[in-house]
Length: 614
Image 1 (cartoon, rainbow, N blue to C red):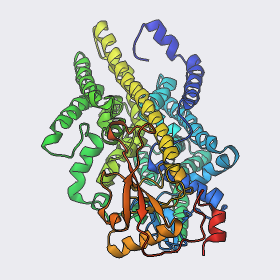
Image 2: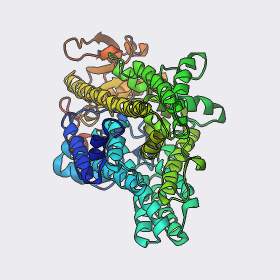
Image 3: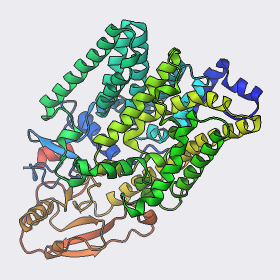
Image 4: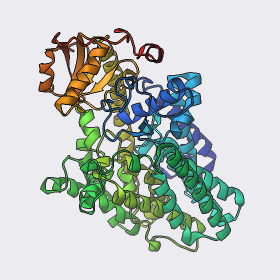
């Protein structure tokens, strides 16, 4: 804590209170989970992982993790599979999701025993492990307020909402933090157990999310100058390399690629998912500074101005005297301006899809941007060397991620800069570690207290961010579940034809309950005819068309009449977010295509497909 009376501050930050602080952090993390509904999905990424999980447990019966495709008998090449281009790929005649399946395998036993509640258990346990891992890391770096630093990472950074989503972000982050802790212990102690634990936790993080391969490389590079035991360093590095290499080899055997997302899902097929040197400035802007929307150009001047104000915070650890409150004031001004947009009511879907840069989440991390400079630290003190290793790993990962990422990955429904989040724990812990020395350099006392209040305000911004984010998370998952229930009951015996790529994975429950075909794939007349023929074999009279346009594709009118379906009173599309226009397509009864033996009502179950599909 950095504000209040000296006696109160001493009591709250004493080591005797650390178990209580951690306990309250754990209780708060668990308690907040009851405020977020179990049903509904934050984004298609969560829904697609759920489909992978369902395929593993219920459809493939543990034989594999390919996506079961209910219409494979009619569409064996997956031409009309209702996924976005980058969501899936085909290998050896099977359809796979773009994400590694190991998180789904981790969640599978919990899902098998506890159903939907089991999905929450996995990420909740990961959140608790992350909290304690941050505490262990902060304590190893001799941070005076180690327990408070850990609580600040979880509750004042855009991490907490991900604890309540079915996503591998928090499990991977928890493992990454523990990997850093064990690696620092290993290179100092020469104990075999720390080397093995470092390799194991870093491997687990990589299995969850593939960007942790980059994280591990940054970590081993950053701790290189700190090595006291080369045997431990080499053992940890070799252990991770062997395990990661084995996993990549398994990936290659199973799906034909060493990595999933980068190598398997169409990088290069779409310009926005292709890496190019010319796109680096705009990619950096999207990840680091964008607030008001748009791309790098004249319209970005307000965003760059706010980012520059926030960057003033980076100079605080190197400043002294009255300069420190002034720099903090500049940073607070930038943070306040950003939150005019970030906390804007009425358009949660729009805001959380665009105001997601580093500038738009937890201004406190900007205090750590220059802590990689050796002059900041006293290298004769082991705790200072550890802090340098922590912050240098985090910053190296941040820079490398921005350099290697594609523009499209910086856009989407997120809390903060999702792909940069692994850097947040280290940056925040290091920034909190230097706060006491920063405050000591300020006089008189009233200026010191003012600076302490300013530092507290920066953390408070992050806490309020999470309050706003949790409200938006609750809104979105509730909306997703409502949308599922509404669409499920629209023409229940008809197949769904849609030009929206999200219907298969958000709401994900529809995928195995209703036949869904992609209109976007029917770009040519012969493909359009083939799609309609498949739809007619499911229901020879009608189809449900779901479009994001008030006027669906015109070519559908050559096959039948389109009748709008009113959703008034059933669901509200807030500020135009995720809007859908449903239509009933009544076929012209001229071509006499016979229906299949598939039942024309009820879900398309596995039993029906296996016994009835010719």
